[in-house]
Amino acid sequence: MKPIFLALEDTMNDFINNFDIEKAFRSILDVIFTARDTVEPIFDEYRTLLYIVGGLVSLLFGGISFWLLVKSKFFISKADDWADALFAGNTLMKRRTLRGWKTIVKDLGTDDAKKHKDAILLADLIFGEILRLAGYRGQTVHERLDQVPPGVLPNIEGLRRAHKMRDAFHKGTAPELTRDEAIAIVGEYRRAFQEFGLID
Image (cartoon, rainbow, N blue to C red; front, side, top):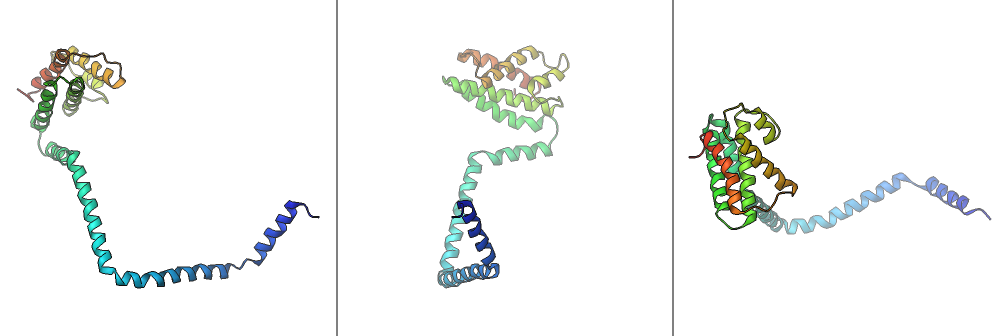
């Protein structure tokens, strides 16, 4: 009696030797053409309906995509980018800073500690962008602050402390802040915005 692996080898050899690739290819083509001939009359009968359904589905997904872009403030962000590209000087950041500042003031006006944190994070984000557009190089706010010459920002040490608090928030090591403490931290950014002439 042959060992089982020899029997399997003989079976595989028989399959390979008797396999007709041309016949197999023709069988596959026959299946494809049969499927096409079966589906084509159905498609012809409901062609108009399928076009209408396809158009409605496209409109639905297009509407959802547009709604998501509006909710994410994508268009506002792009408008700001275009304005920044068209205008020079302090005006290129003033509109964006004013919009962000209104959000910051609104968040600080609540008793929600999370809103206070959001206000500090947004103030730091705006400040980092101001430094970048002012020509101070660096990947982080800390690196850009190191490029600021003495006397340009009188409260630069306060800004360093404020930025460290922002970093602590991201690392999850920040202490609980009272509303007054959050206002004091944001006040450092406010003074910098005023020094750059972006808010009153």
